[in-house]
Length: 165
Image 1 (cartoon, rainbow, N blue to C red):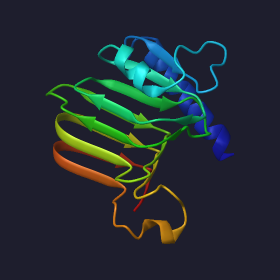
Image 2: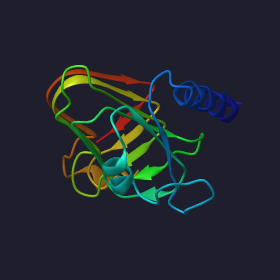
Image 3: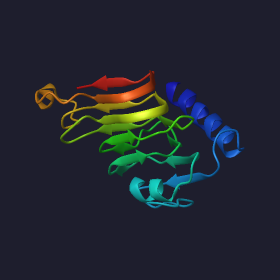
């Protein structure tokens, strides 16, 4: 039942975004380079994306997500969360927004998510975020890396997310 709910939720969000309610373009990122995808990994997709675009991320394994001074929505295509090594959001100006939704962020050596020097708004929804090595085993989190590191960022909200680290 939860899977159906989440799939419907993501579909509704994508349809609103695609209709122009929030973003400019929808860019499909798929690690397996399936039909309709534009990019196989996040760094190239983020570099190519314009202000306010939406990255629709299909399930798979991805390298670092780094958003620097750009409004973006990064959302999972469905209920199976994409596995992303770690993420950072930095240098958002006033009026710039970032939304991360339905993602699994796990760093091998630091915080799963770093939020640094932002004046804009950041919303993290339905994400699982792990510090240290990103493993679900307790022994791997003994190095003291937090799930999230927030520095000089004025508007950060978490909703229905799990933070471990």
